[in-house]
Amino acid sequence: MRVQVQSRLAYEFPEPTETIAAILAAHAPGQIVESETLTLSDGVRLAESTDPVSGARLLRGPLNGRVTLGYTAVVRIAPRLELPPTLQVAPWSQLPVAVLPYLLPSRYCPVDQFLRFAAREFGHLQPGGARALAILDWLHVNLDYVHGVSTGTTSASDTFIDRAGVCRDFTHLGMTLCRAAGIPARAVAAYALALDPPDFHAVFEVFLDGGWWLVDPTRLAPIGGMVRIAHGRDAADIAFLTTAGMVTQTEMCVTVIDLDVKPPLDKPSQHPNTVEEAATTC
Image (cartoon, rainbow, N blue to C red; front, side, top):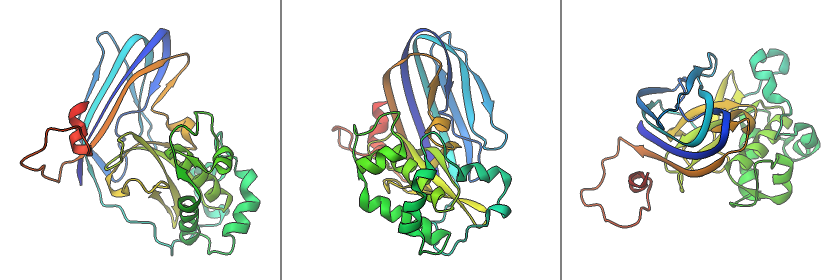
């Protein structure tokens, strides 16, 4: 599958502020960046750094005043399989060292608080794919996707109580339950085809049978149409913008277009109601 991703972000910085932006498509297994364009406001200079392990590409530097970041890329995505229930999880002693941190508590994922619940709710299931799928089903049944319920400080514990949130909240609680059930899980930031309304999307991966398997706990977008940006322990590691000071966001527009689908010959000139139509509003 070939997709075009676009993002446009605008901010106001009251003073020079060190900034890290994660909006570029990663150089990661399963996807190839065929072409891309990064547009910055006049006078803005950001250095690009690539994580040699994850392939995540970060833009870093001080920003001041009104700043606009624009990014467009064409990415080829390899086919992805849905998570099979037959996959197994390895004993901790046999896991790669790099995977071990994704079993542990992190800023938004207090795993130790969910050990008893995970054992009672999912302990009767075979460790591995079956248990991970049961956790995803539990999220689907027990959580409502609602904007405005959570904030940037909401943890998995808060979401467990509120039983509502957005993609980052579903991901934090899903990862917490997986880790508590003995399954390594890490957060993934992505551009997501068919996400409505279009936005940066937070999903996660589980490590089973020696590999990472991508899942969407919200069930709002197909995993086959996701373009990876970064991965980490939780949202603190994969935020699309991290700053050392105050900043005000004044604009954000994200779109993903399936380039393998031909647009209709006669497109109605109305308000956009599909991802393809929304692309013209950025």
